[in-house]
Image (cartoon, rainbow, N blue to C red):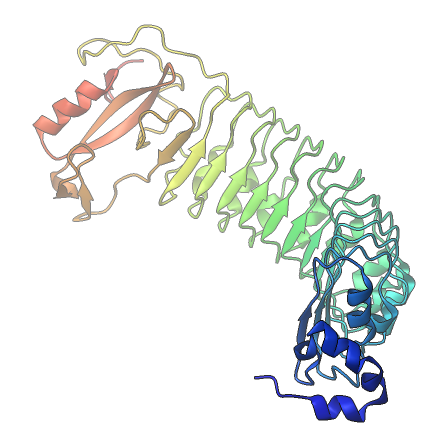
Length: 435
Protein backbone atom coordinates (compact mmCIF):
# COMPACT_ATOMS: atom_id res chain seq x y z
CA UNK A 1 0.00 0.00 0.00
CA UNK A 2 1.11 3.54 -0.77
CA UNK A 3 1.43 5.82 2.23
CA UNK A 4 0.42 9.46 2.34
CA UNK A 5 3.57 11.39 1.57
CA UNK A 6 2.31 14.92 2.14
CA UNK A 7 5.00 15.54 4.75
CA UNK A 8 7.71 14.44 2.32
CA UNK A 9 6.38 16.78 -0.35
CA UNK A 10 6.20 19.75 2.03
CA UNK A 11 9.80 19.30 3.13
CA UNK A 12 11.12 19.27 -0.46
CA UNK A 13 11.34 22.73 -2.10
CA UNK A 14 10.83 21.33 -5.60
CA UNK A 15 7.76 19.44 -4.49
CA UNK A 16 6.32 22.59 -2.93
CA UNK A 17 6.68 24.34 -6.28
CA UNK A 18 4.34 21.84 -7.95
CA UNK A 19 2.27 20.89 -4.92
CA UNK A 20 -0.75 23.04 -5.74
CA UNK A 21 -0.84 21.89 -9.36
CA UNK A 22 -0.50 18.21 -8.39
CA UNK A 23 -3.34 18.61 -5.95
CA UNK A 24 -5.46 20.22 -8.66
CA UNK A 25 -4.79 17.39 -11.14
CA UNK A 26 -5.67 14.75 -8.57
CA UNK A 27 -2.50 12.76 -9.19
CA UNK A 28 -1.10 12.82 -5.68
CA UNK A 29 -0.89 9.01 -5.60
CA UNK A 30 1.46 9.07 -8.59
CA UNK A 31 4.08 10.71 -6.46
CA UNK A 32 4.24 8.30 -3.59
CA UNK A 33 7.74 7.71 -2.29
CA UNK A 34 7.00 3.98 -2.63
CA UNK A 35 6.10 4.16 -6.34
CA UNK A 36 8.18 1.79 -8.48
CA UNK A 37 6.19 1.60 -11.72
CA UNK A 38 4.70 4.56 -13.59
CA UNK A 39 2.74 4.16 -16.83
CA UNK A 40 2.01 7.39 -18.70
CA UNK A 41 1.40 5.73 -22.08
CA UNK A 42 -1.24 7.02 -24.44
CA UNK A 43 -1.37 10.54 -23.03
CA UNK A 44 -0.99 13.47 -25.40
CA UNK A 45 1.90 15.80 -24.72
CA UNK A 46 -0.14 18.53 -23.08
CA UNK A 47 0.66 20.76 -20.14
CA UNK A 48 -0.56 18.16 -17.65
CA UNK A 49 1.73 15.44 -19.00
CA UNK A 50 4.66 17.85 -19.13
CA UNK A 51 4.02 18.68 -15.48
CA UNK A 52 4.05 15.01 -14.49
CA UNK A 53 7.25 14.31 -16.44
CA UNK A 54 8.97 17.42 -15.11
CA UNK A 55 8.29 16.34 -11.54
CA UNK A 56 9.96 12.94 -11.99
CA UNK A 57 12.97 13.48 -9.80
CA UNK A 58 14.94 11.44 -7.31
CA UNK A 59 13.65 13.52 -4.43
CA UNK A 60 10.02 12.83 -5.38
CA UNK A 61 10.15 9.25 -6.68
CA UNK A 62 13.30 7.77 -5.18
CA UNK A 63 12.27 4.17 -5.90
CA UNK A 64 10.88 4.57 -9.43
CA UNK A 65 12.20 1.61 -11.40
CA UNK A 66 10.05 1.28 -14.52
CA UNK A 67 8.71 4.10 -16.68
CA UNK A 68 6.28 3.67 -19.59
CA UNK A 69 6.13 6.51 -22.11
CA UNK A 70 4.60 4.71 -25.10
CA UNK A 71 2.51 6.63 -27.63
CA UNK A 72 3.02 10.07 -26.12
CA UNK A 73 4.12 11.93 -29.25
CA UNK A 74 7.62 12.44 -27.82
CA UNK A 75 10.25 13.88 -30.19
CA UNK A 76 13.08 13.36 -27.73
CA UNK A 77 13.60 11.74 -24.35
CA UNK A 78 12.52 14.28 -21.70
CA UNK A 79 15.38 15.81 -19.74
CA UNK A 80 13.68 14.99 -16.45
CA UNK A 81 13.60 11.32 -17.44
CA UNK A 82 17.30 11.33 -18.35
CA UNK A 83 18.06 12.63 -14.87
CA UNK A 84 16.14 9.80 -13.23
CA UNK A 85 19.09 7.60 -12.23
CA UNK A 86 16.95 4.90 -10.59
CA UNK A 87 15.11 3.92 -13.82
CA UNK A 88 16.18 0.49 -15.08
CA UNK A 89 13.22 -0.14 -17.41
CA UNK A 90 12.22 2.44 -20.00
CA UNK A 91 9.55 2.01 -22.67
CA UNK A 92 9.24 4.80 -25.25
CA UNK A 93 7.75 2.98 -28.23
CA UNK A 94 5.35 4.44 -30.81
CA UNK A 95 6.53 8.00 -30.46
CA UNK A 96 8.25 10.40 -32.86
CA UNK A 97 11.77 10.05 -31.48
CA UNK A 98 14.49 10.90 -34.00
CA UNK A 99 17.40 10.24 -31.64
CA UNK A 100 18.34 8.79 -28.27
CA UNK A 101 20.53 11.71 -27.27
CA UNK A 102 21.41 11.66 -23.59
CA UNK A 103 20.42 8.04 -23.02
CA UNK A 104 23.89 7.35 -21.62
CA UNK A 105 22.88 9.25 -18.48
CA UNK A 106 20.64 6.36 -17.44
CA UNK A 107 23.39 4.37 -15.73
CA UNK A 108 20.95 1.89 -14.14
CA UNK A 109 19.14 1.12 -17.40
CA UNK A 110 18.65 -2.61 -18.08
CA UNK A 111 15.73 -2.73 -20.52
CA UNK A 112 15.19 -0.17 -23.27
CA UNK A 113 12.36 -0.33 -25.80
CA UNK A 114 12.07 2.35 -28.49
CA UNK A 115 10.21 0.44 -31.23
CA UNK A 116 8.17 2.29 -33.87
CA UNK A 117 9.96 5.61 -33.88
CA UNK A 118 12.08 7.54 -36.41
CA UNK A 119 15.49 6.95 -34.86
CA UNK A 120 18.31 7.16 -37.42
CA UNK A 121 21.18 5.94 -35.26
CA UNK A 122 22.02 4.40 -31.91
CA UNK A 123 24.28 6.96 -30.16
CA UNK A 124 27.78 6.04 -29.01
CA UNK A 125 26.80 7.26 -25.54
CA UNK A 126 24.74 4.11 -25.08
CA UNK A 127 28.04 2.49 -24.16
CA UNK A 128 27.65 4.14 -20.76
CA UNK A 129 24.60 1.99 -20.05
CA UNK A 130 26.80 -0.86 -18.93
CA UNK A 131 23.94 -2.68 -17.20
CA UNK A 132 21.81 -2.82 -20.35
CA UNK A 133 20.44 -6.33 -20.99
CA UNK A 134 17.78 -5.76 -23.65
CA UNK A 135 17.67 -3.27 -26.50
CA UNK A 136 14.54 -3.18 -28.66
CA UNK A 137 14.72 -0.62 -31.48
CA UNK A 138 12.52 -2.22 -34.13
CA UNK A 139 10.72 -0.32 -36.90
CA UNK A 140 13.05 2.67 -37.04
CA UNK A 141 15.50 4.06 -39.62
CA UNK A 142 18.72 2.73 -38.09
CA UNK A 143 21.44 1.96 -40.65
CA UNK A 144 24.29 0.91 -38.36
CA UNK A 145 25.37 0.30 -34.78
CA UNK A 146 28.20 2.23 -33.14
CA UNK A 147 31.48 0.37 -32.48
CA UNK A 148 31.09 1.40 -28.85
CA UNK A 149 28.43 -1.27 -28.47
CA UNK A 150 31.29 -3.50 -27.34
CA UNK A 151 30.93 -1.89 -23.90
CA UNK A 152 27.53 -3.51 -23.41
CA UNK A 153 28.99 -6.69 -21.98
CA UNK A 154 25.69 -7.58 -20.25
CA UNK A 155 23.57 -7.34 -23.39
CA UNK A 156 21.38 -10.43 -23.84
CA UNK A 157 18.74 -9.35 -26.36
CA UNK A 158 19.23 -7.20 -29.46
CA UNK A 159 16.12 -6.70 -31.57
CA UNK A 160 16.54 -4.42 -34.58
CA UNK A 161 13.90 -5.69 -36.99
CA UNK A 162 12.63 -3.49 -39.83
CA UNK A 163 15.48 -1.02 -40.07
CA UNK A 164 18.09 -0.25 -42.77
CA UNK A 165 21.01 -2.26 -41.44
CA UNK A 166 23.44 -3.76 -43.96
CA UNK A 167 25.99 -5.19 -41.51
CA UNK A 168 26.99 -5.33 -37.86
CA UNK A 169 30.20 -3.99 -36.29
CA UNK A 170 32.89 -6.52 -35.41
CA UNK A 171 32.97 -5.06 -31.90
CA UNK A 172 29.65 -6.81 -31.22
CA UNK A 173 31.66 -9.98 -30.55
CA UNK A 174 32.42 -8.64 -27.08
CA UNK A 175 28.75 -8.94 -26.18
CA UNK A 176 29.36 -12.53 -25.09
CA UNK A 177 26.06 -12.88 -23.22
CA UNK A 178 23.88 -12.16 -26.26
CA UNK A 179 21.39 -15.02 -26.64
CA UNK A 180 18.68 -13.44 -28.80
CA UNK A 181 18.98 -11.30 -31.92
CA UNK A 182 16.53 -10.15 -34.60
CA UNK A 183 17.57 -8.47 -37.83
CA UNK A 184 14.35 -9.28 -39.64
CA UNK A 185 13.37 -6.91 -42.44
CA UNK A 186 16.70 -5.17 -42.96
CA UNK A 187 19.05 -4.85 -45.97
CA UNK A 188 21.39 -7.76 -45.31
CA UNK A 189 22.88 -9.51 -48.34
CA UNK A 190 24.78 -11.94 -46.11
CA UNK A 191 24.68 -13.08 -42.52
CA UNK A 192 26.98 -10.76 -40.51
CA UNK A 193 30.09 -12.80 -39.69
CA UNK A 194 30.30 -11.41 -36.15
CA UNK A 195 27.17 -13.37 -35.24
CA UNK A 196 29.07 -16.64 -35.60
CA UNK A 197 31.30 -15.62 -32.69
CA UNK A 198 28.39 -15.26 -30.29
CA UNK A 199 28.35 -18.82 -28.99
CA UNK A 200 25.46 -18.27 -26.55
CA UNK A 201 22.96 -17.29 -29.26
CA UNK A 202 19.73 -19.26 -28.84
CA UNK A 203 17.40 -17.27 -31.11
CA UNK A 204 18.32 -15.73 -34.46
CA UNK A 205 15.77 -14.04 -36.73
CA UNK A 206 17.06 -13.11 -40.20
CA UNK A 207 13.89 -13.24 -42.27
CA UNK A 208 12.95 -10.75 -44.99
CA UNK A 209 16.44 -9.79 -46.08
CA UNK A 210 18.37 -10.57 -49.28
CA UNK A 211 20.63 -13.32 -47.90
CA UNK A 212 21.80 -15.77 -50.60
CA UNK A 213 23.75 -18.35 -48.60
CA UNK A 214 24.19 -19.81 -45.15
CA UNK A 215 27.90 -20.43 -44.46
CA UNK A 216 29.16 -23.61 -42.82
CA UNK A 217 30.49 -21.62 -39.87
CA UNK A 218 26.94 -21.08 -38.60
CA UNK A 219 27.23 -24.58 -37.15
CA UNK A 220 29.50 -23.13 -34.46
CA UNK A 221 26.35 -21.80 -32.77
CA UNK A 222 25.82 -24.93 -30.71
CA UNK A 223 23.28 -23.24 -28.39
CA UNK A 224 21.00 -22.13 -31.26
CA UNK A 225 17.39 -23.25 -30.78
CA UNK A 226 15.49 -21.03 -33.24
CA UNK A 227 16.77 -20.14 -36.71
CA UNK A 228 14.45 -18.03 -38.86
CA UNK A 229 15.56 -17.59 -42.49
CA UNK A 230 12.20 -16.94 -44.16
CA UNK A 231 11.82 -14.73 -47.22
CA UNK A 232 15.43 -14.61 -48.42
CA UNK A 233 17.21 -15.85 -51.55
CA UNK A 234 18.95 -18.89 -50.08
CA UNK A 235 19.67 -21.72 -52.52
CA UNK A 236 21.33 -24.22 -50.20
CA UNK A 237 21.87 -25.04 -46.54
CA UNK A 238 25.30 -26.01 -45.15
CA UNK A 239 26.18 -29.68 -45.45
CA UNK A 240 26.97 -29.92 -41.74
CA UNK A 241 23.78 -28.27 -40.51
CA UNK A 242 23.23 -31.41 -38.44
CA UNK A 243 25.78 -30.08 -35.97
CA UNK A 244 23.19 -27.63 -34.64
CA UNK A 245 22.15 -30.19 -32.06
CA UNK A 246 20.09 -27.78 -29.93
CA UNK A 247 17.97 -26.56 -32.85
CA UNK A 248 14.21 -26.89 -32.25
CA UNK A 249 12.76 -24.66 -34.96
CA UNK A 250 14.10 -24.19 -38.49
CA UNK A 251 12.17 -21.93 -40.86
CA UNK A 252 13.48 -21.72 -44.43
CA UNK A 253 10.19 -21.00 -46.16
CA UNK A 254 10.00 -18.65 -49.15
CA UNK A 255 13.54 -19.20 -50.41
CA UNK A 256 15.05 -20.96 -53.44
CA UNK A 257 16.19 -24.24 -51.91
CA UNK A 258 16.61 -27.05 -54.46
CA UNK A 259 17.65 -29.77 -52.01
CA UNK A 260 18.27 -30.42 -48.32
CA UNK A 261 21.50 -31.87 -46.91
CA UNK A 262 21.30 -35.40 -45.55
CA UNK A 263 22.80 -34.23 -42.25
CA UNK A 264 19.46 -32.60 -41.46
CA UNK A 265 18.58 -35.99 -40.04
CA UNK A 266 21.06 -35.37 -37.23
CA UNK A 267 18.95 -32.54 -35.78
CA UNK A 268 17.56 -34.86 -33.11
CA UNK A 269 15.91 -32.06 -31.11
CA UNK A 270 14.17 -30.47 -34.10
CA UNK A 271 10.44 -30.06 -33.43
CA UNK A 272 9.30 -27.72 -36.21
CA UNK A 273 10.61 -27.39 -39.77
CA UNK A 274 9.13 -25.16 -42.44
CA UNK A 275 10.21 -25.34 -46.09
CA UNK A 276 7.11 -24.18 -47.96
CA UNK A 277 7.48 -22.14 -51.15
CA UNK A 278 10.89 -23.40 -52.25
CA UNK A 279 11.85 -25.50 -55.29
CA UNK A 280 12.63 -28.78 -53.53
CA UNK A 281 12.44 -31.80 -55.82
CA UNK A 282 13.22 -34.50 -53.26
CA UNK A 283 13.54 -34.97 -49.52
CA UNK A 284 16.42 -36.80 -47.81
CA UNK A 285 15.35 -40.10 -46.27
CA UNK A 286 17.43 -39.17 -43.23
CA UNK A 287 14.58 -36.90 -42.12
CA UNK A 288 12.99 -40.08 -40.86
CA UNK A 289 15.49 -40.03 -37.99
CA UNK A 290 13.90 -36.90 -36.49
CA UNK A 291 12.11 -38.52 -33.56
CA UNK A 292 11.07 -35.21 -31.94
CA UNK A 293 9.61 -33.68 -35.09
CA UNK A 294 6.06 -32.45 -34.46
CA UNK A 295 5.29 -30.18 -37.41
CA UNK A 296 6.68 -29.92 -40.92
CA UNK A 297 5.56 -27.97 -43.99
CA UNK A 298 6.70 -28.82 -47.52
CA UNK A 299 3.83 -27.22 -49.40
CA UNK A 300 4.35 -25.48 -52.74
CA UNK A 301 7.57 -27.17 -53.83
CA UNK A 302 8.36 -29.54 -56.74
CA UNK A 303 8.01 -32.78 -54.77
CA UNK A 304 6.74 -35.82 -56.62
CA UNK A 305 7.01 -38.35 -53.79
CA UNK A 306 7.61 -38.54 -50.06
CA UNK A 307 10.25 -40.94 -48.64
CA UNK A 308 8.65 -43.69 -46.59
CA UNK A 309 11.05 -43.02 -43.71
CA UNK A 310 9.54 -39.60 -42.89
CA UNK A 311 7.39 -39.78 -39.79
CA UNK A 312 8.40 -43.31 -38.75
CA UNK A 313 10.27 -42.18 -35.63
CA UNK A 314 8.06 -39.26 -34.64
CA UNK A 315 5.33 -39.87 -32.06
CA UNK A 316 2.86 -37.53 -33.77
CA UNK A 317 3.70 -35.47 -36.83
CA UNK A 318 1.54 -32.86 -38.55
CA UNK A 319 2.80 -32.59 -42.12
CA UNK A 320 1.68 -30.33 -44.95
CA UNK A 321 2.43 -31.24 -48.57
CA UNK A 322 -0.20 -29.29 -50.53
CA UNK A 323 0.71 -27.54 -53.76
CA UNK A 324 3.25 -30.13 -54.96
CA UNK A 325 3.07 -31.75 -58.43
CA UNK A 326 2.07 -35.23 -57.24
CA UNK A 327 0.66 -37.21 -60.21
CA UNK A 328 -3.05 -37.93 -59.80
CA UNK A 329 -4.67 -41.35 -59.99
CA UNK A 330 -7.18 -41.71 -62.83
CA UNK A 331 -8.81 -45.12 -62.41
CA UNK A 332 -9.56 -45.98 -58.81
CA UNK A 333 -10.75 -49.52 -58.07
CA UNK A 334 -12.41 -50.74 -54.90
CA UNK A 335 -11.73 -54.43 -55.42
CA UNK A 336 -8.81 -56.01 -53.60
CA UNK A 337 -8.64 -58.65 -56.38
CA UNK A 338 -7.63 -56.12 -59.01
CA UNK A 339 -4.23 -54.64 -59.43
CA UNK A 340 -4.20 -51.37 -57.43
CA UNK A 341 -3.48 -48.19 -59.37
CA UNK A 342 -0.34 -46.14 -59.01
CA UNK A 343 -1.00 -43.51 -56.38
CA UNK A 344 0.02 -39.90 -56.08
CA UNK A 345 3.14 -41.02 -54.31
CA UNK A 346 4.81 -44.19 -55.50
CA UNK A 347 3.34 -46.87 -53.25
CA UNK A 348 6.58 -48.79 -53.03
CA UNK A 349 8.44 -45.68 -51.85
CA UNK A 350 5.65 -44.24 -49.77
CA UNK A 351 5.29 -44.48 -46.01
CA UNK A 352 3.16 -47.60 -45.61
CA UNK A 353 2.60 -46.75 -41.96
CA UNK A 354 1.00 -43.37 -42.60
CA UNK A 355 -2.43 -42.94 -41.09
CA UNK A 356 -4.74 -40.25 -42.35
CA UNK A 357 -6.67 -39.09 -39.32
CA UNK A 358 -8.71 -36.47 -41.14
CA UNK A 359 -9.91 -37.83 -44.46
CA UNK A 360 -11.25 -34.55 -45.82
CA UNK A 361 -8.23 -32.45 -44.93
CA UNK A 362 -6.37 -31.87 -48.18
CA UNK A 363 -3.44 -30.07 -46.61
CA UNK A 364 -2.51 -31.55 -43.25
CA UNK A 365 -1.56 -35.22 -42.96
CA UNK A 366 -1.14 -36.77 -39.54
CA UNK A 367 1.69 -39.25 -39.49
CA UNK A 368 2.03 -41.79 -36.71
CA UNK A 369 4.92 -44.20 -36.05
CA UNK A 370 4.69 -47.89 -36.89
CA UNK A 371 2.91 -50.03 -34.29
CA UNK A 372 5.86 -51.77 -32.70
CA UNK A 373 6.38 -53.63 -29.44
CA UNK A 374 4.50 -56.53 -27.95
CA UNK A 375 1.47 -56.18 -25.68
CA UNK A 376 1.22 -52.48 -26.54
CA UNK A 377 -2.45 -51.50 -26.31
CA UNK A 378 -3.48 -49.82 -29.58
CA UNK A 379 -7.11 -48.89 -30.42
CA UNK A 380 -8.81 -50.04 -33.59
CA UNK A 381 -8.67 -47.28 -36.23
CA UNK A 382 -12.29 -47.98 -37.21
CA UNK A 383 -14.28 -48.54 -34.01
CA UNK A 384 -11.60 -47.24 -31.57
CA UNK A 385 -12.04 -50.33 -29.38
CA UNK A 386 -8.89 -51.14 -27.38
CA UNK A 387 -7.00 -54.28 -28.35
CA UNK A 388 -3.57 -55.74 -27.80
CA UNK A 389 -1.02 -55.29 -30.55
CA UNK A 390 -0.63 -59.02 -31.18
CA UNK A 391 -4.38 -59.48 -31.78
CA UNK A 392 -4.77 -56.59 -34.20
CA UNK A 393 -4.63 -56.94 -37.96
CA UNK A 394 -2.82 -54.57 -40.27
CA UNK A 395 -4.58 -53.47 -43.46
CA UNK A 396 -2.98 -51.17 -46.00
CA UNK A 397 -5.50 -49.12 -47.98
CA UNK A 398 -5.51 -46.10 -50.24
CA UNK A 399 -7.43 -43.03 -49.13
CA UNK A 400 -8.42 -40.39 -51.68
CA UNK A 401 -7.45 -36.84 -50.83
CA UNK A 402 -8.06 -34.09 -53.34
CA UNK A 403 -7.93 -36.52 -56.32
CA UNK A 404 -4.82 -38.14 -54.84
CA UNK A 405 -4.55 -41.63 -53.40
CA UNK A 406 -2.42 -41.86 -50.29
CA UNK A 407 -1.32 -45.20 -48.84
CA UNK A 408 -2.53 -45.46 -45.26
CA UNK A 409 -2.18 -48.30 -42.80
CA UNK A 410 -5.22 -49.20 -40.71
CA UNK A 411 -5.02 -51.32 -37.59
CA UNK A 412 -8.30 -53.15 -37.20
CA UNK A 413 -9.61 -55.40 -34.43
CA UNK A 414 -11.85 -57.69 -36.49
CA UNK A 415 -12.90 -58.73 -39.99
CA UNK A 416 -15.96 -56.53 -39.65
CA UNK A 417 -13.82 -53.45 -39.10
CA UNK A 418 -11.59 -54.57 -41.95
CA UNK A 419 -14.62 -54.53 -44.28
CA UNK A 420 -15.54 -51.07 -43.03
CA UNK A 421 -12.01 -49.84 -43.69
CA UNK A 422 -12.18 -51.26 -47.21
CA UNK A 423 -15.48 -49.53 -47.85
CA UNK A 424 -13.90 -46.18 -46.97
CA UNK A 425 -10.94 -46.74 -49.23
CA UNK A 426 -10.46 -46.29 -52.94
CA UNK A 427 -8.11 -49.24 -53.27
CA UNK A 428 -6.97 -52.08 -51.04
CA UNK A 429 -3.22 -52.54 -51.12
CA UNK A 430 -1.04 -55.22 -49.62
CA UNK A 431 2.76 -55.25 -49.51
CA UNK A 432 2.70 -58.25 -51.84
CA UNK A 433 0.57 -56.50 -54.46
CA UNK A 434 2.43 -55.95 -57.75
CA UNK A 435 2.82 -52.32 -58.71
